[in-house]
Image (cartoon, rainbow, N blue to C red):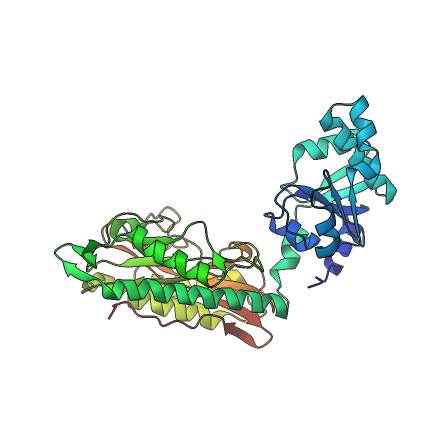
Length: 391
């Protein structure tokens, strides 16, 4: 995939700088996107109309020449690093080599992302390079709009996600109620056991994740509580899975809420209300509307039913206490924002829609799908049933 970097060219002109510089390893999504290269150690990517890579060591040199999208791939040794080490401390030798690299391409000024390392910025400034911060996070903004190829990567990750969700639901469906606990194959069913089933399934589908959410009862009242310990019957169980495809690096995201046994009237009411809010959010998604407007559509449903939201009460600790959604791609949370202040949605934006209600006295309920904004509305990339009671 060759990204369209015309917006980056425009921003460089706006900043009146010669290039854009990133110093990070490839877990930084902007670095991976711009360089097209996956490496565990930090390296420099310069964009000056072309993509150019500079490595401190030679370890990744050959692979970068084969796999990256860079026009040039170089090492510090190409800029006299070994000789510099005889005269300067290693950190000083590195920065002088980097300055020489920039000088080769007549780069006297660079824009950098807000997370750019301070040591690198200060070192380059000492070498006479003007370094300015790109507050608009241009590369992050560019990659928010996905190409057809990227959308297919997200779709594939979501298909793996659905298989993992099915594995979790199947395990819950096998559970027997034994008093105040769930039992599978004679053992108490725990959050950890369900997470294990999810992770194994994802691995079989070429995906992985560091953490997932399987939260029951009071744990589910905290939207980001990962959950732990025994799962209980007649209580809402939030399962939120957000894996990354190991080959493409693109993420998926989906949440369902399940109950084994009989949910009480409040949980049923909350679930129906959240499903209505989720449908309202989906219905509002189209090119040209703002993320803020989609969020408002969800808040309207909750507030019309008397539920608190952060819009109606910024200090509330119960009710709808988070944003409606976020962008999903190389990062599981990225632009655009589907929240107060969220900007215009454009074709190619991939976003989650995930309303929910929370109260420690009740638990939590959340439903989440992943959709892509299209020219004439949106396409739901999620094909998984919405149902509370596990059969």
